[in-house]
Image 1 (cartoon, protein in one colour):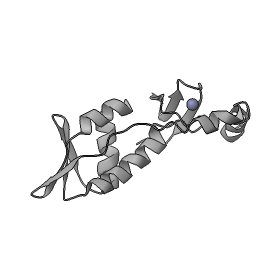
Image 2 (image 1 turned 180 degrees about the vertical axis):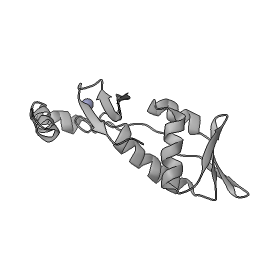
Image 3 (image 1 turned 90 degrees about the vertical axis):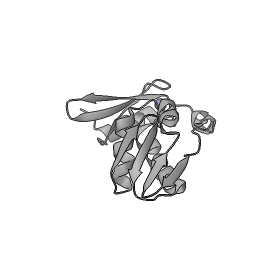
Image 4 (image 1 turned 60 degrees about the vertical axis):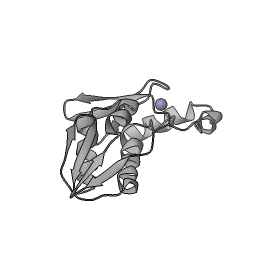
Length: 137
Ligand SMILES: [Zn+2]
């Protein structure tokens, strides 16, 4: 059986060259709106952003809070973190989430969904049909 790398190589070699160039269309994610109040940071457009990402809020929250090394929870449409953070910090973490768990590594489009099989997670791309294994959040 072929290993994953060679399958990926083959998938890439079957995509016409300009598929990569066309992927210049950027994924439109609004800027993170963060408001610090006391010792907590309120991510005010959290719900709006996870709707665009098409990912469960809990998963995004877990990732972002983990990267910020803090605790967080969801209240209404906000995500709230313990501690004072800047929107740029949250945005950096969000971008790395998007790169790892939303953007298809084969065609670089964001039209993906995440599926769990046993203990493994896969990113399935509806644009190019690629299926990529990803680390659990
Ligand atoms: Zn794809």
